[in-house]
Image (tube, rainbow, N blue to C red):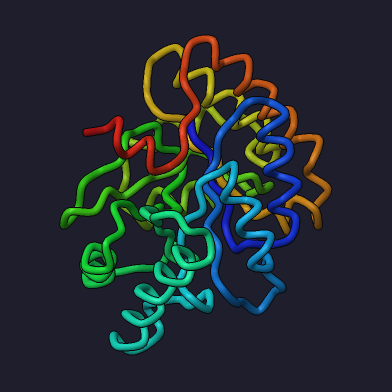
Length: 238
């Protein structure tokens, strides 16, 4: 089991508190700046003292919409900023909006990252090695998607192996029930359960109770499975 949280919003600290309460781990992907307020350097260091902090570009940039030279700077500088801020090596990266091409994966490798998290949903697979970088799929987003969103996600990424799990999510708008259902599938059949989300959306949509329900289910499942950070998951896959 693993979890990951994007964008470095102030409510990341609330997610971190809940993770710690349930004895779970997570990776927080933090840009230095964004259109939304982000964690201060002091708060990033506080977060990094207990959890993995990964890069999310310097300015939360969709790398597919800018020149290669800018994308490269955003990727390389994000790693340098986090390492200087936390005093820890940064191995994990996440592309804003989940948008990237093969050339961007190569930039990730050249920058020295070991992994890149994607927004592929309904996966229970381990990370996949691509151009020397471990690409991490996800299982469920902590967001009340309609069922059509899951269909589109599978079709866009051509991951037909994820299609059968679409029928395990039940009423897809209840993402917590979908997450718990797929957690049980992974527990019974094997695989990786990966929950991800944005703390800002959890606050705006009033999803804290649902998040704690899923965390409680993960804590119970920890009797049979270990919860790891995104980078630790990549290391266990080798």
